[in-house]
Each structure stands twice: as C-alpha cells, then as structure tokens.
Amino acid sequence: LQSCNEELQSTNEELTTTKEEIQSSNEELKTINFEQQVKLNELSLVTSDMNNLMNSTKIATLFLDNELLVKHFTSQMTEVSRLILSDVGRPITDIASDLIYPELTEDIREVQRTKISVEKYVMSHVGNWYNARILLYHTLEGKIDGVVITFVNITKSKEVEAELSKSKLALEKRIVDQDKELLLASNRDRKSTRLNSSH
Image (tube, rainbow, N blue to C red; front, side):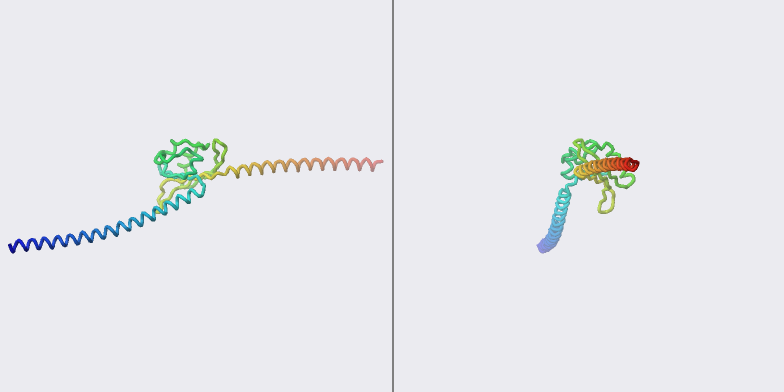
C-alpha cells in the first residue's frame, strides 16, 4: 500500500509538472498567436494602403510573374484590357487587350533579358493614347520576380499636342502669306518709284 501510495504521489507530481508545462506552452502559444495577429493586422493595413495608393494614382498597372502570368492589377486596367479577377494566374498572352500593342510580349522579354525598362506610346482601338512603361519587379530582398507594366492615359496631352501643331502650321502659313504680301507690296512700291523717277 505504501509502495502504491508512493507511485500515485510520483504520478501526481509528474501530472502536475506536465500540467505546468502545458500551461507554460499555452501561454507561449497565446503570445505567439497575439504577435502573429499583430503582424497580420499590420500586413492587412499595408496591403490596404498599397491598394488605395495604386487606385488613387489612376494609373492602369499590371503585375506579371517571370512566366508572364498575371499576379495582380489595378482597377484602371479594365480601360486597356478585359482583365477580371479570375484572370489572376493566367498568361497575359491569353487576355484580350484594347491596345494596339502587338509587340508587348516581345518588349517584356526584352526588359527581362536586358534589365532595361521600355517606354513607348501606344494607342487603343477607340483612339486613346497611353504611355506604356515596362519595368522589372523587385522583391524587398532585391530578387527579380517578374515585371510591372503601367499605362498612363495621355489622350488629352496628345489632343493638346495636335491642336498646338495645327495652330503652329496655321501661324506659319499666315507668316508666309504676310511675307508674300509684303514682298509684293515692296515690289509694287519699287516699280512705282522707278516709274515716277523716270518721268
């Protein structure tokens, strides 16, 4: 009986020790869980900030991975292509675009190969103009993980540029016409002066 009591007491002490260890582990897990929750909240806030920033710029932005699969895009991308949320993970070559930019894939591959960004003006089928820029996507660790493509709508600038060009041509024509009139008037004056001096 004495031996049985000692065993029970020993088992009880072990259970007490185990219980304390479990309680200690639970406290550690609670702390870890709290820290993870704080990090998740911070990450969620940063993600919200980034999404708000990207959307507030009103710049159509497309993120592709190294295999040219869609990773993410801003809502403005719907102006230049027919992207929808379910297109994430699909190749960019499979997605219909409103842009007249047949060499897009070629330009992306060139940026990946040379590590030099590409910038050009492209037009859409409805007549809008965009400044397209293709840049490498760098992770925080400095690793290249695809490309970022931005499309800035420059239609208004192009329209102003065309109007200025028209105005410049009209002004140059007026100057040429005035120069011709002055030249003709000057020639008439000389003839008239010569005629008068010969009488």
